[in-house]
Image (cartoon, rainbow, N blue to C red):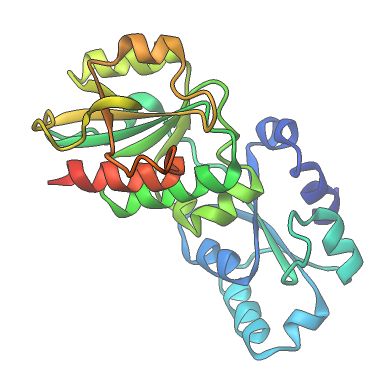
Length: 252
């Protein structure tokens, strides 16, 4: 199978899950992918990109990793790309095998649970924010967008290549929380002002769906609901923005 055919298949979630592979699109994303420890299956690249100075540097980086390269024209690359104006390169890599039970939950840890987050841009931003603010990892619960969706990968800007993230069921998450003696707090309108009470040493923050909020099963499991005070003229904050504020408050 050609790399182009493989990349086209990986645009679909079923293809990514069946093959345990994902796509990284764009020059910066592929540069960071090649500098990571992930196993890179191959790279699709257009001759036009390789003719540029940055493309030449990228070609050297690809060569240094002994990665398979398939040159394609712009039309062919566009058929595998997720963006409207591709940058001329797509990387194919093996999805890291992170396990919920092996997340690095230290004596003091923050975990983020995505409870039905559906927008890929929001998910990507939350991943990057969680990594930047020292979270131990991110858990995607049922109803959440695939964390290896190309839009999510692009939005996280390289975080996928080293930060722990997993998909899990509610039961699996709750079991890990119990085992690690980790509290579960949920972000919800009408909750207690975040930062008003000291957070436990170990706490997971659940972020609900952009429209419906937290699911009943997660809300019922939460020991505390927290919110961010905002002006009454504004109905709510974007969930990714809220995630950043809450994680910053709890970072201490």
